[in-house]
Image (tube, rainbow, N blue to C red; front, side):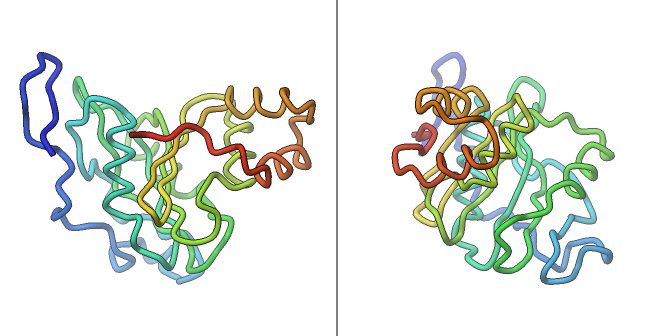
Length: 192
């Protein structure tokens, strides 16, 4: 799949599916238990050269969506004039709510500014979960991407969540978010 540069010139796809991926053996000793969120020992840009944050998130999803035992989580960062994503962390095996704080602390400690977040849904709901929606509301800004086991990438932001709650006259609290996540019409927007 060839991509177009800003000048409209065909260039190589920066989404190299053959670059080695993060594995649990590369996690810090403190986070190497199968039930905890694995934080990489080395935090770096795994792939870059994308024209948009959405392209970086979609590539991350393509590379990690088929790993079915746990969610993978990353941050989208600016790299020069473009975008990339960081070495991802891996959620605990079959854990529904992934503890992301240690991973995001490590990203910031490594000197990165996080512009968006991306993660996979290897099982369960093919759309954003109530945990995802609550996290987005709490963050209040930024973008959140999710790629499910079908390799479909979706995007949401806090405004989308707030607007959907308001349209249904539901409160922006835990109960309203749970109701919204169960509502079949809320998916965010599909990244093509």
